[in-house]
Length: 232
Image (tube, rainbow, N blue to C red; front, side, top):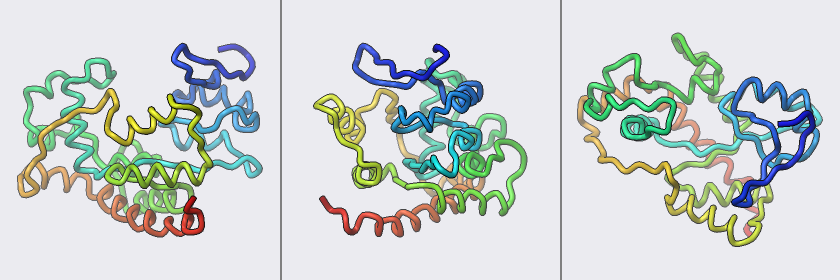
């Protein structure tokens, strides 16, 4: 990766800064090299939200943005996806012979209240109302929210807020592919009956995330005011 920050390009034309913010070690390296202060990165992608917060300062602040999905739909989709995605580290072929109800009953395989855990930094252990409040406050104070079900509107908000511009036909094609569900990891699967036992189990195991999701809808509506005077 080198000792200094620089922009590298792929054969496909994508451009990246030579740091890996998907690992804790990479984030620490980015912090030491003052990634944010360098101005080289337009945005940072990471699953280590709280550790990555150390990249920013009072002078160099950041803004979260995310595409959210109904927690039950996400759990169902993840179940089907991990049963076939042999390129993923969490691939589990045994899921292919398991019913969604069996999956929902398991404690060692199913992710539950993932959004609340992620935002409150409580990845393991029991959750309380306090963790839910932390997650809500993180969304309210730090996050520009989008939703998968209205991804066109969500993308428009991101583009306006961050002043993103399409750089040629390739970048616009990438955006259109995202909006039209044309991504490589898309995985079609049948829906489940909302009155089924499996659905009820998933609801029970994701009660914090369901409340958080409804709160995010409220914030999404409130954030519309950020764009009322910017219709161009």
